[in-house]
Length: 163
Image (cartoon, rainbow, N blue to C red; front, side, top):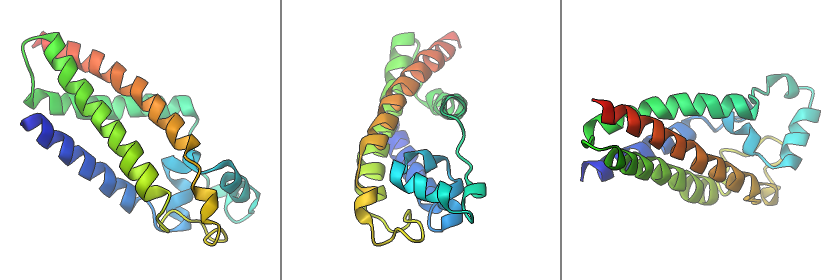
């Protein structure tokens, strides 16, 4: 039961962070999700002299490693409260938490909210909702998340089984 509570809390926190991290051109351009914007929108931003110096998108490897550290620490903390005596139990619990969070991010945040909200629209593209509908970049991010949370479940599951 605690596992499901943790998953719901993590999903709500993720949505809150995404919501608060959007809403203006400045926030949207400097956010770590700029990479998820469709290529056409990224091109428009990079060609705009007022915006191109404000882009703060980290290279994919840096983003992956920072997500590994951030979510690894977060899931390890959550894992302390749902810890079992076996690696397989800890691995399963953490894998469920991580992949549940990943699925929520993809299906709810990316496909339902992000593609339809005006909060992520950049000035000059508000009337081009079609630019934001392509799910390919979000799907690739979801696949990276599968690998990320699998690695975290292995590492954190092992750490939790040591204690």
